[in-house]
Image (cartoon, rainbow, N blue to C red):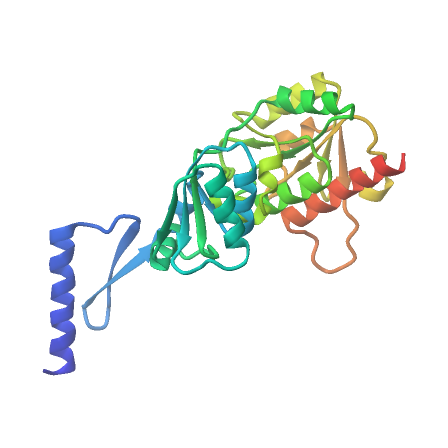
Length: 298
């Protein structure tokens, strides 16, 4: 059998399977015509966005460990076959103590569930993340006898950035994070993994309108800062003492124009290089530590 005949038979078989089975779930079929030979090339491309929108999967050892210590409802914990070393033993013991369902499965199943993400041999299936209200954040600060410290995120779409911001926020004593419902990543498995479990100790509110949320914060006595290159002062020059909120803009365009107008003061980060922008999570981290530093030194 010639190479051309073999390729033709393979192509015919693929087309027959497509007709019999229909599109593969979670994948997109691309049909592209080769201008030179008039042939068709079929490709199956994994739809990674499906995983990015799921809020019921916790992936990785640290993230699963933290969710086990929390009050979150856990439906099942999946463990890879033969992977019983190190922290996996601790995870299994805690799961058994809590009477949770433990399933030992083939590693390929975990690979499929995580869509190729490094799962470290463990995935937990949980109820979707429970968001809170802005009032819950303010009450938490009041109960602790602290000035409210809130982070407002304006359309952060990268789950890695959101996870990193949550992790830094928890370390800096932030009382809550506000995110919009539209054009902002939710609490997905990737966010959970990047936060290294810090999300279990952070209050997060998902609001319909960021600007209305800022108005609510102002009515509660908070001073609202915006991290922007057009800021009046550098971050190290500002006195962040007192109740405050910091707005962090999106990865591409920063804070939207209308939200900029809502801020009481714009603050910029000193930069001396040729590139005039920072990653959203890095910028957020710098601002949060400036606020923490001011509170520790007062």
